[in-house]
Image (cartoon, rainbow, N blue to C red):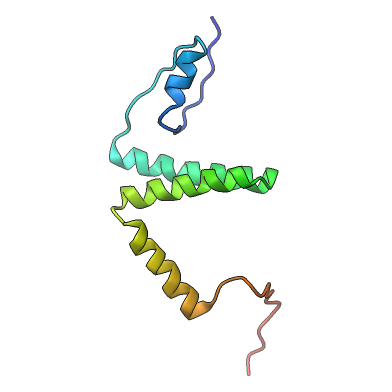
Length: 106
């Protein structure tokens, strides 16, 4: 019997997928404080995977984690969209590819 240890947050259907391959997943439902900690860890994991692979599917994984964090924080997607819009209006987006090299104090 071979055992692989993961100790990480996974999508809801992953245990079912594992069972369908004939393996036995050992899982637990996290308490809120640990869930938030694992969401943050998962966000870093997914960002690092995107940076490594430059794959759009990794962006989808990042977005899924962001949506889970918003749900955990009880923030509606419309409220979050408004926050994004306000920041964009105040500071702009990244459309113009501006790279700030330095600022000279006057």
